[in-house]
Image: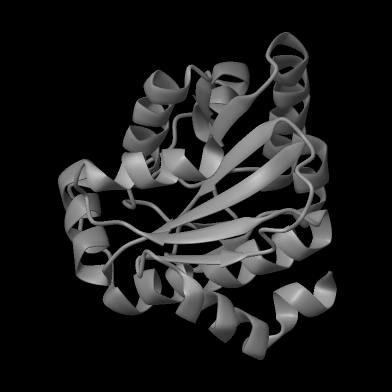
Length: 207
């Protein structure tokens, strides 16, 4: 299966055969396991909105990794609020997700593979947490870099450097592929249009 996810030729063939040019699919023939649909992406790609709409469409409860962690440790994340202990946070997240997957047949979880530190440098989150999240599929949301920066400016009231955001986007995709390979689960990389088309198409992957 590693050959499937790592082969450039395989990826090109899959991209050419897709009906929708906005999405790249890898590992689609893998038998689905796990109960967590992991919606990944850098800040400002619309994960929260996507998860909320998908939850209503598919009748699957949706959660934010950041909100779950905040509810336990009391920290708030966003502009000028760097993560103080990413390793402990992932332990907290894994335990809470374990509880949620015992209570629900499936859940939708919005989260990251990478974050910014206080200096807007890219930090990779501990890879050890993802096997504990019981992930059945990873959907990585991506968007135009200027759209992301504009969304973050509205959300956080600050301007993020293009170089920093570009590095974050690149590393997030790199990590998504690596984790999908490690977990042997399908990965869909979807380019957001920020229209009604987005949740409709992503939902079609999950039905």
